Length: 244
Length: 313
Ligand SMILES: Nc1ncnc2c1ncn2[C@@H]1O[C@H](COP(=O)(O)OP(=O)(O)OP(=O)(O)O)[C@@H](O)[C@H]1O
Ligand SMILES: [Mg+2]
Image 1 (spheres, each protein chain N blue to C red):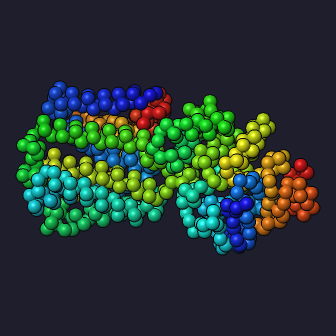
Image 2 (cartoon, helix red, strand yellow):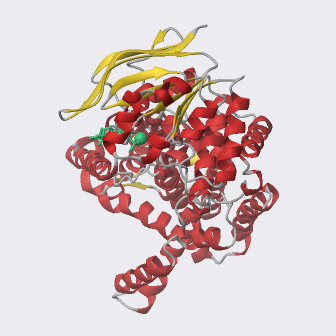
Image 3 (cartoon, rainbow over the protein chains, first blue to last red):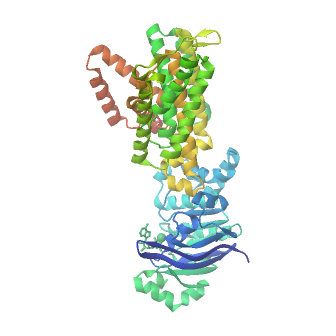
């Protein structure tokens, strides 16, 4: 099983605060990996370094055998990485169609028909097909999250990084989301930051737990669920997720 | 609304202005010729400011580069109209490339200040080397240059038609560009640069491209202005001429293809009409501008787009 993404000693501090510290991480291809951890554990910081939004303080990142540590974000996207934001960051004044078209256009170029088809498919997959002409800023928060995911899909990435995609979604939408991710597994590798334990338990092949910027545990969902260290980490910060 | 409608609208304006050549009274005929050339400048500015979100306070340097690139070749070397025009356009393209490479390392207020400083530097250079540029006085473009294919360009009719031709070409080019994927990436950068980068678009290179297109069109306008109206002067490279296109674009509607023309037309006639009524015409013009910004913050065409025609390019 080939490793698509690898980090060695990856660290990032913010003026003394060690947000991510010496993380060694291996992600096999065509798997769904969940990244969990209490608030402030460094999950967003970690994936921001993977995609190139944030330069690491030290350490290295390898994507498909190539050292991408010094590569700017657009180049990494060109290599097949995609990232959806935890805090929705759609183009608020543009329509849903245009948002997704921008995601598809880099890969498909000026082929308008192919872009339109890709947009329609991505919007359909997240259940927003009938909102194509709506202005993104007018959508509900949950629908903006789905639009983010559609923008990720339209890039047809080799690695899709989703930062808390289900935050703000209704129960029925979460169920659809699970089905969508399961279907995607055949096409791509998924790194999923998630607070919702039912999503993690049902989708993930393996789970990595971050705590205070370090890898606390890694294993199958069942192993993680049973781990006392993980429970202690969650209980220590007083979040409810541990009880799920 | 489908592409047919907005092509109809834009080509309709072009046809209307062509008809103007035959029906406008002499005074208006001259005004509209001048407005069309200035609208080319505004359309160039709009590509940087309106579509890409690059608020430059120094576009007069590109207008001036076009004017002087064309004018100096004509003045010192008796160049023909076409080589002189080409020199102006190339000067603007090169200047915008160099300025872009430096200024686009900054953004927002710093970008405004850096472009302003570069533009001031050019204006001062033009005044300083008076042996070559005739300094503040400027110079008249020799009549040898103002001929093209047997036409005398100081003739009102030829002047109008050439202004109309340039205006039409730039308008259609803009309409094509903003619907092309490059233009759509310009808008993406304006709206959310980080998001655009994370969709794989190189922000620096794209903005550089937008600035060079914008600067080159501005230079085309400056060169045509000198060629058609027969004079090059340092005021055209001054701060005032950096503010004008910003005002025209804001009044007409930033990020709309027709906005720059409508804004330039509106402001020209606002000043023209109010100066016929009172000496304090700038006061009237100023009040009108304030009212417009208060009640139509998107500009004239911008409000039409917002209220009636959302996907107007
Ligand atoms: N730009 C920044 N400047 C300073 N500190 C930061 C910055 N970004 C994150 N941090 C800090 O780094 C730590 C890790 O933050 P991060 O956002 O990566 O956590 P997270 O695991 O994604 O949390 P959450 O579950 O709340 O999204 C936190 O203490 C946070 O305050
Ligand atoms: Mg986070």
